[in-house]
Length: 369
Image (cartoon, one colour):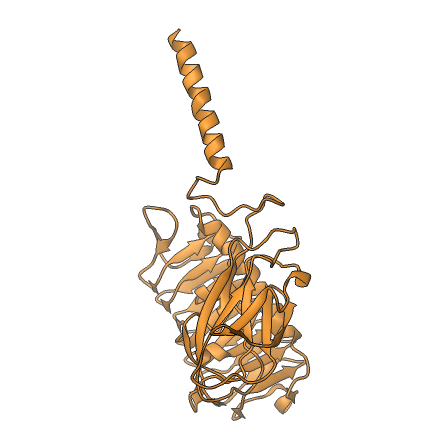
């Protein structure tokens, strides 16, 4: 009889668990669509950032998603920008995992705006956005030069992100979070990792931040899968930008150059055998495309001038990027393969590699937001 009561209680508990799950009562569960059964898509990052001040008057407003979206559902009716209650006229385009709203004309100065992506936006499986997403920003007084910035999505939450390995020759210094996926934490070497009690992340004396790997506890695996997908989409976006302002500058040797805002393209390896200056304003953007490697010689400096910011400098490298010993580098590296910072090298930016990142007693610091 006791066994029968135990069976009935167990059955009742199972039914109750099923009903709670069906009603969406599990607070740890990801939002699940009613269509495909996969997690509903979300907005992972925006341009400008939420509550961003001093935004350029000619800004292109962008939202990056956690999944590949159906372009036909991203229109001027599902992605809007408003000044108070007045809609801003503009057009919407979609590429990779990023939708971009381009206003029909420059926005007015010192004015607040709200951008919204509605649940009318759906992914390729037909699943609607988990919830409408809105963010606000305030314009400044100037326009920006150069192309629209590259949306990094949640890849931009990491100062170092790679797929196969991340290594250090101690002691390196990292300011910001590290992520590795799909490889496991055993491929994060040289950091002497100490796992947090939750096993969601690890710590290292060489890292001012957290270290995440694909085999850690939830929600880390899903978060890293999205970050890596966003990194790959960002690479594709940067590589696909058309109509360069500068083609084959210096036949690939940019040592001694002062680089103004714009889109640069090379069909060969890019070398930096001498100091380089990146000159422009705080809202200006640089995108450097190369189908080869990027190699910076030892003991060279890359400097920002005129208010230029590392977060707006993007290096799309089809090969591998190597920053020479005791050199200093600025910007976001999006490498199809590997990134290496040699002994004593320093970097203000992000190292986002589709294979591995190697730090050899090097220092990397995430850029100012």
